[in-house]
Image 1: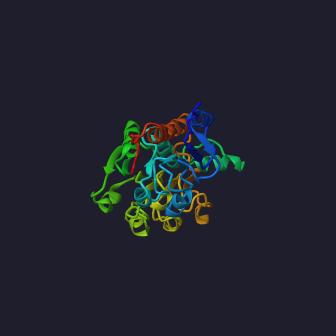
Image 2: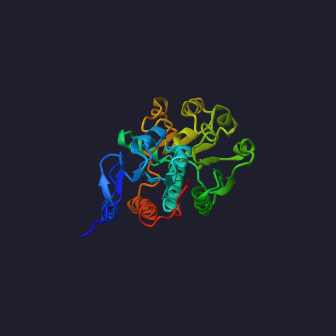
Image 3: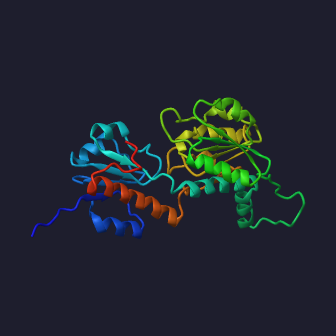
Length: 297
């Protein structure tokens, strides 16, 4: 009896049980990328030319467990005819929700209030105590008019804000001057690294706040810490960091910053859906001999 050899797949980090079971039904999981036909990579793994070389010439597909692919050398993958896929759409709503969470937490001083209560500071209800601002009526500049940016704009508008979308080719400098909230939703690349630097922070209103749920290096973190300390802008809500998981030490003591540990897609149903997209990409390339719909190379 002839036994069919199942494709070998390496998973760089543990995945949800449902995704693991789906992988094991169709593939043999291996502990290293060497000799694998397919790889499920996390955004914490740098898939560069050396990584692809070490994996071997049999490698046919890398399914990145993220929508961003800045951790992968796409040119190197193309040279080696390795298909790279990502996980679009399924994390749009969750990430947009987190962007709104950061906006509201910052404007309504929720993080600051939480720390205040935990310190057991004395307080009583007062009409002037810990006043914040509403999202309603604010001009929210959405930098990056892709899926997540558009959904963030929709949610902000539902709160009564006025969203303004900034895409490629728009005059970002002029738009920054008018915004009450700046929310970043661009992929990380050579043209967006430090997109928000010291110069652009100085263009913003002193009452404006910055939200980043895209990639940490889109913002010059040192420049942001300085701007917050000096009152150049009023606050920031960050879910991603330039040298993640390290966070600029100068940000940590600031009261006008809300920090979360890369939770944009962190709901169970979202993470499972992302994993199933990876499974589908592996199945398409390794079992069905076709290019998956979510291929980026």
